[in-house]
Structure formats: structure tokens, C-alpha cells
Image (cartoon, rainbow, N blue to C red):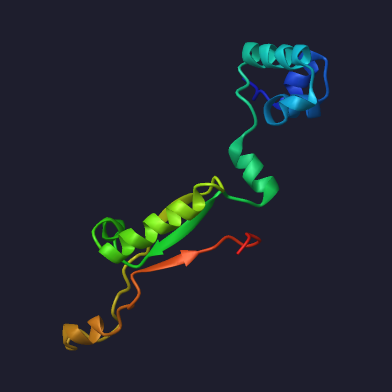
Amino acid sequence: MTKITAKSVALAAGVSPSSVSNAYNRPDQLSADVRERILAVAAELGYHGPDPAGRALRSGRAGAIGVLMTQHNSYAFSDPYAIGFLRGLAEELTDGEVGILLLPRPRRRCNAPRSTPSRACASKAPRRRWRLLWPAGSPS
């Protein structure tokens, strides 16, 4: 079974691939009749619209801000400062249709010899409990 693409929908509907794209992304660019015909053909073929992953690759925007946790992700839901930070971040990102991605960072292993007291390894632990990853090219 071949994958149904915007190009195959365009061939079946007798329109250009850009018209298929406009039917999903910019409906005001098409007449209602043409848009309805494209969507009907797409539904008949089983085409569900543009792939969000492909759109992210083409635009260079992931639609998410990553927060790298230096502890387990459950820390973000138990520490009052982390909760406040994430709540504020979520409020700021709401209008921009950007999500938050929590990423757990693997625990560092202490390279000290086994005879070294455990507090020596603890002193090498990171002090910050989270880091903000801002996508390249995003507005600051």
C-alpha cells in the first residue's frame, strides 16, 4: 500500500499540490467549492492532512521549549520553585502555541575510587535542578 500524499490527492482532485496545502492551512485562499472537493477526495483516499513532523522539519520550528531536568522528572512536580518556574513558563507560552518538553538528564556517575566517601561524589552534583533549552532562531 502506497502512502497517500498531498501530491496524490492533488492528482485525484485535479488541482495543484499547493491547492491541497491551502485547503488545510489557508482555507481562505480557495473557494468553498474547491476546498470541499479537495477535502472530500482526501477523505476518500484516507489522507488526514499535512504531517506535523514534516512541517516542523521544513519550518525549523519544533513548537516546544525543552526543560532539561538534572533530577528525575517527578522533581518538577514536587519542588515549589520548579513548579513556579514551569507554571510561569507555561503561561508565557500559551499564546504562542508552544509546548513544554520535560527531559530527564541521566544521573552522572562519580568517577572517584570506591574508597572515596560518598560525600565527595555528592559535592560534584549539579546545583541547578533544571535548565531551559531555547530553540535556535526563536524570538527572545
